[in-house]
Image 1 (spheres, rainbow, N blue to C red):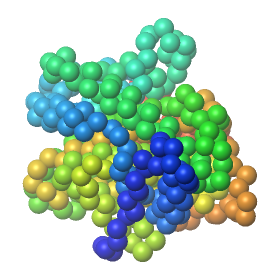
Image 2 (cartoon, rainbow, N blue to C red):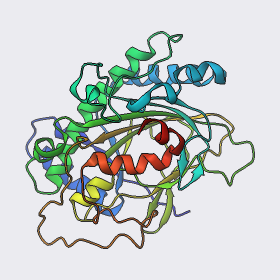
Image 3 (cartoon, rainbow, N blue to C red):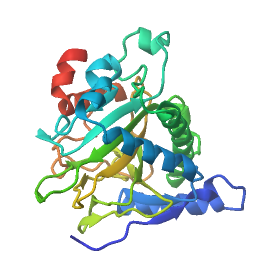
Image 4 (tube, rainbow, N blue to C red):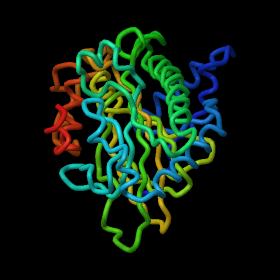
Length: 330
């Protein structure tokens, strides 16, 4: 392991009116995206009490027996691709991950046009009926993080010398919102097993809340580095679609998780992604040439050769994560 520190960026300048405050933050984001593809954010304004409640309710859910948790199984979520999955049911590069979790997304009613059309990954969430305030807390958290996603994408646009509304106007006015709560079981001596193996995220931006256990590792230019939890912060990283849009200027960075503690580890990745039906195209950036990324990517698949909508790309990826579920709902 290489000992390096990921950048910590105070993003409060993106929302205040001080002279050049947003420009300063944008330059910090640019440097972080080019050097690491990962950075911590503070000054984000997300309510700490809400985060604490989300963590406590999640601990309560995962402490239940398997039969109870399976009452909101992903198999019941249908094409919406929502609900609970047990340890080992999610795959990375064909290998089972050592984690369990719940999939959520934007809460859409049955009469929503995308739901009526049977669009995958759109619909209602599944919530445990026996844990009061679970539904309300998750939906409030999703709403808060969606607002944060819009703020960060404006900062990323400025970092590329674009108008701050660039992404909102083209890709994220109505973003695809995906939210996960993962629980990594205690490590009982099998240190060779990964909670989740090496991978990159699919969309434009991931905003991760960690508990205090740690275990996230990021592949830097110098080797793998730890991204330990920092109180009051989120970890942000860019995904494949932002890599594609920027022609490789901002690379989607591989990362992985291994729980080395004897306690459960909770993580809360929030994915702020392009609209499902939008075609993702490269941005015309000055002096940026598309870099061949196929040979050094973890999956040997170039994001620059892809053609189609974000939904096309996403479904191709998630069908490998849950191959059994794919056969039932896609």
